[in-house]
Image 1 (cartoon, rainbow, N blue to C red):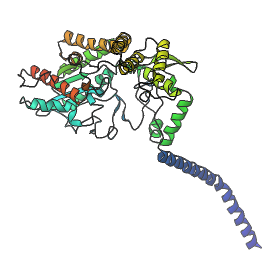
Image 2 (image 1 turned 45 degrees about the horizontal axis):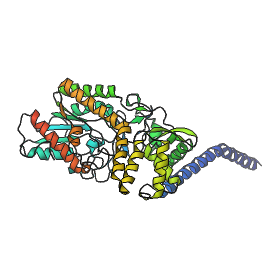
Image 3 (image 1 turned 90 degrees about the vertical axis):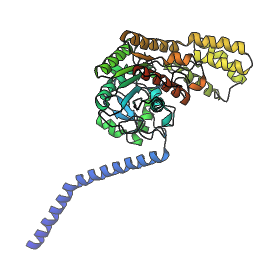
Image 4 (image 1 turned 180 degrees about the vertical axis):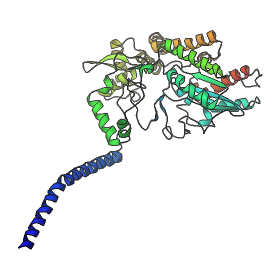
Length: 441
């Protein structure tokens, strides 16, 4: 009987233990199920390869006071916001520091160095061959003049003079250049939700971790589209206003000289003809106010009619659309530019010239860029800084082949920049350039 009682007691203890462990088992089961579901969702999204980008207005970089960073386009930087990521731009060689070019030795080196700070024009955004970017062409040109020069390309797409000012301290301390060039202005003039000075690039660790998940990025994209994130750019301001731009240039020039290096300023050339339309204009979309770019608006309106801009070129449908659109937006230079192209196709050169005159009249952003270039000249004159005035240099050679688009130089354009810089460096070194090394091209 005692034995039976013992058995009964043992069974009760086992049932109690089971009861005590069942919540743990249930929790483990729930967690395992969730992890399996998340893993399955992640695998399915990676297999499907959908668009994972953040919905943006149809412009360039869009900042808020908490910077939205998108993998894998760039690598994160807590000070600058972003640097280049290897593999994103195809064959471009990106070094471990996140800039275009080979690995660079830190500290002072035997030969002279030139550091190029700038945006996508300096980086060579549309140039796939590393050797065709002006930072790579310049040392080759100077070799012919008996000068050994190592060029370091610190240009990154999207950088403004704000990033340039922050980056310069690292460049001067780590690489001890003899010359530093500054090629900024285009991104400075871009509209954004907040100025660069107000933008913070730190991101919570959880968000940084989740950004590696394709499923999270897909969910984020759809949620942002659901709340019409792409239509919420209101009261835009310049990323870097004119006065701050000038102040940044002055700060960079003074810091460069204080470090014993020679600064060189560059203005920003633009392709003649097409208007600047990357900055948004206010419109009404579906009964609600929004800010969109002119080319985005045209593409959307044509898509609603089942048309594409290139396919519709020369058609009666496109002519009718442009006539109506110009009545609605008579001050949009992009519409006048498209109208000029259609008139050229129709064999009306006089009408096309008249429309191009309207483009020049209404292209306010090109006028704004002229003001940024003029601030570069003012700093050059007031601080006695060497200036390579690319804006005027290109204007003297109004050749479309010097550009790959409205602002990015082509290989021929990069060669022209390198030739102009070679002449400037030789002047600063008090050397006479060899035949062919000049601002020509």
